[in-house]
Image (spheres, rainbow, N blue to C red):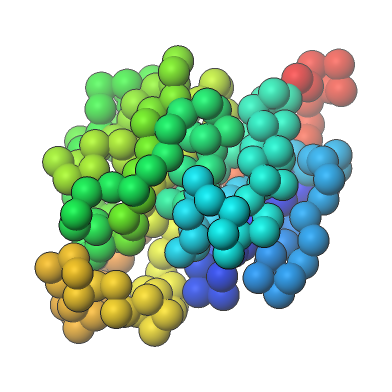
Length: 245
């Protein structure tokens, strides 16, 4: 059975719809809850893909983030071996760092709440994002940002934070926004991080009120993108050993 390693940093930021897509594709999941703490493997042997979730820690500091260097090492291994990677929010920032790009604090205003991302023309040929609308409404929840790595495809932007999505190599994606969320995830985010909204021009109540319509509008795009990623993980397990990077 194909197997995907999932790194979860905090209880609220689980894999949600990503896990559902992997399950539909017949991919087994090895979820390491580093906050538990659960140890990370030393390498990706026995794993066909890697998912790194979000969290409130900084991708550019070890402070309060003891697994940071181990995660960067695993992401570097995944890039070197061509394993499918999906980094979400903090995970995207870590992937950018592993690919040699800068990660740093964003502007004075965090980007939190429901809002669109604009897809770039590079998405037309992207294995995950091709065929999607030019704008997709998603949940944002971040104050840090990153540079798009050299040689990577810049896939999405907003006016406030231009670096929203990229693909490094053929099969490694960083998504600054939260494409994985469902109603349970939104409630968990608000419970854990609701106070973050007060500096971002919104409120927990506003995000909760918008959630049903926003999630319904996101559902088709969400399933298409995450099912495509899950299919890549499943297909790697079927590749002859000699063809694996």
